[in-house]
Structure formats: structure tokens, C-alpha cells
Length: 329
Image (tube, rainbow, N blue to C red; front, side):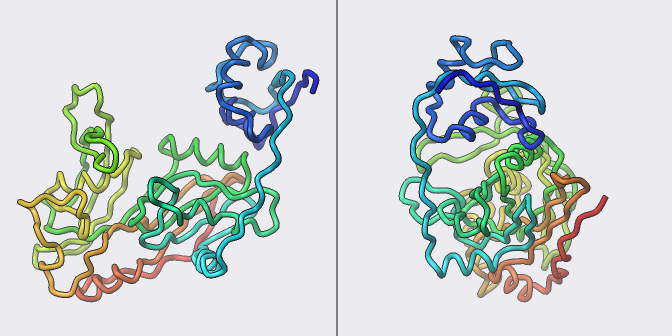
């Protein structure tokens, strides 16, 4: 292959240079991209560039001679039952986006001991496209609700940039043990990782702790049951790992079923608070409002999972059905 000059398209706006290369040349190793940038063989509009440089439409990327590309990965065959369930979970789709109501207990990605996960099933959602849908954000294994997928690499870059900033309004519902005081407000509490391996978790950090990352959540109480349990609306303004779960513990109102972060002095047996309540995690991504890649805004809501529906019924909480997904200007 000889030296090429390729023009960045509108669909590739704001994508990192290394990711642009991996999309155009699948199988290209990150170490080689770094070396080619370091030695000046990769350039943007004639100038040297870092692998982290974000591209703009119309820029010219110098592509030096590269190794022969690996054969494209085959389309994975998804279990018919998983494919059926996944398609039933679709809340919205168009040429740019697919939104799912992620079920309880399904990991978004693989990891140690995890062989069945959403990322391994995404070939079932191609719908004839040459592109495999891409994850642009994450939900914990036991968190349910709205999960967004991008249908093309360019859209994935745009949506990932929106999630990095504060351009997407995220609303979660949770049932918590206790009633927060005050009943609404803002939690501005830095978080940091502690432990390691499977024991890794998030914990509050001092404001001057160099390992701490700022984490902000707005909350309000939508209903409560005898001050023992409450239904909260949570809006994270930052996107730290397990942010909502740790912030609820800081409110002295841990999320029902959250065995990882419950504290003995707050609640040693969630299910004992009201007989018959599910011990599953009661955290649900209820709504996303975001700029649509093709213009305007998109609002997506997801109905509660069965275990939370049962809890709401037991506690007398009344949740409206999710509104139909809509685009607006």
C-alpha cells in the first residue's frame, strides 16, 4: 500500500485519530498507530498529530503504508431466544440510533467469568446494515432501563462526545431504604476507587484527594412509605462509576437490593423492611433526553422492570407508563 490522503467526513466529526484509523483499518494495533504518529508518518493537514487528536470534517489525514489488514470478523450467530428478547426490548430505532430497555441481570460487556453479555449479541441488531451497533455508554449489570446504541461509527463518536459532556439529560428512578433529609437537593461528593480485582468499589473522597473525581447528583423524593422506603428521582450531572449507588448511601438512603454498597448501620436486611419485597437492585434508567445526530432532540423513556413494578404495587407508588419516544426541535 502506498501513501494515501483521506478526507475526514461530516459523519466522523470529533472522533479521535487512533479510533479513526482503527475504523478505517480494522485490526491495526494501537502500538503501531502510536509509533506512526510519534515518527511523523501520520499527519493531519500536513502537521504532526497525537493519537488523541480529535478530527474535524474536511481535514486531510496522511495515511502511510500499512500492513495488510486482517480479515474482517465474521458476524456472530446470536442465540435465537436472545435475539428475540433483544428485539422485544427495543424502545426506538432509526438510521442512526437504537434504544433498548435493558433487562435486569444482563451485563453490558464481558469480563472475568462473563460469557453472556449484551455486546456479544449486537450482531442481532444490524437489521441489514454493514455496521454492527456500538455501545456508547454503560449500565451496571443489575441496572435496568434506557441504553443507547449507535448504528454507525460516526454516530458513535458523536454520541460518545455527548456523554462525556453534559449534553444528555439522564434521569433514574430508585427505591431506597429510608427517606432522605432534605427530601430534595444536590449531592456534590467526590468519589475514588478503592480495593482491587473483584473487590474494587467506589468510595467517597476528600475534596483535596488527588485520586478523587468530582461527582454531582440532583435528587428529589417522589413518594415514600411510612418513612421506611422512598421513591427517588436521580439526575447525575457527572458520570462516575456507581455514582448514584454511593451517593444514595451518603444520603443514608441506600438503594434497595444494593448488597455491594449497603452499610450495616443503615439497613442489614432490605427485604425485611416490607415482607415480600424483591432483593434485586431497584435502580432504573428511566429517561434520556439528547441532541439527535440528525437534528432536533430525542426523548426516550423506559417502563419499570417486573421486580420494581411489584415493589411499587406493594408500597402504593404510582408510576406513569413511559411516554412514546419522540423527536422535537
